[in-house]
Image (cartoon, one colour):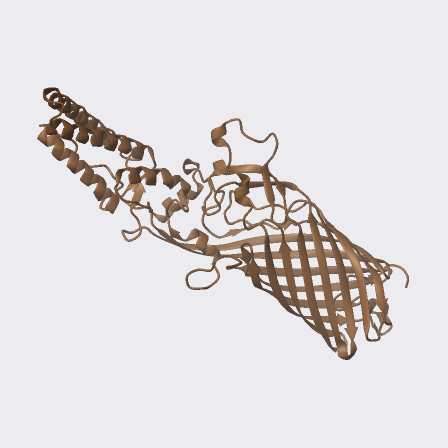
Length: 510
């Protein structure tokens, strides 16, 4: 076996002395489900689209909470505001092209670098139903019928003022009479109803006409109207309510228009990023021990290595709810120990153990309840970020079927500790009302573990001569990976496929 070919085993971090290895791979991964979190009622893994699906209420849009609270203060029973129902499907895909160059300084020492290019894509489709079966609220009438609302409130206030005079007269005659007590109770209810409606019309949404809440508000007005009539007064006969449910265009407006406070930079539609630079790597690997001679079995090679990962990648855009970043954007130091064993009949075993120390950095996040899908823009903050360290173990048996052709299988376990976040010193706003939430809200789910299995094939062509012309060693690799388990956080049920090749060139040493 030539020294060049020996650098082309199914697994080896090393390149023979005086040789350079050029590595170009294309890796595509995608997922639409999550592992490591509570399953849906049907027992399957939660889908990515689930976060965007369901009743369009305060779980999706927190700015709906005040309108909901005002109506609840009027009604005798709980009411959940709904603008309709969304059914969404989402799939995230990532294409990465790591370009690597490694140089064999000695037979036992290799140094190199990796330049990753990353492109992300999110497929997103939604169906919005805003019919009477799902929607009980719409845009407030104060939005486009302000004159009507102002006239209604004015008439209601006039009636209440007149009823106050009626109550005062009844109580003046006999403060302990049933007429005085009843009129006082009606007057208090009328003023509370008026105050609640004033608050409701200051909000952007109101119950729909014909909905349960709309009919309940109208019933309250009818009760007051009957009391006003007994006092010889007239009042407004209809509560202004929302007249039409939202459209899908209105739904997109809620997400992107700054008026509603979400201010997303991209609507609820498919998204694709440009190609971006990931986190650059500089690495070195060394052989520390070897038993057996090259080309014979049994033979075991063991070594260690280190990688420094540079903060050149970009984070997710917190204003784009469909975005995926190209890297962590902070310094990492990764230490590893590895072993490659060779046994008779072409059997082998690759083992790789890594420990990553992740340095602190900064990140832009929306600090809000993680159960709310669309966090408001006011919650966005620049944070000091201390990511948890990680460990990775990979075991991969391989079998050489023929000269140059190897099949392999494997198992990879990855575990990451929890992150921590804090408001950066000097970045806290002077206005207390605009202070983002406690960054501890972001911690759950940042620590997790994941398991993957892999199947692959590697073809190696050794250097050969044809008509006196030397060829170049070549390696072609195809690997399939599948996530099969996860715990502690939202682990993507990711499927990935890798195809790549390696070329070897001699620089010195013949």
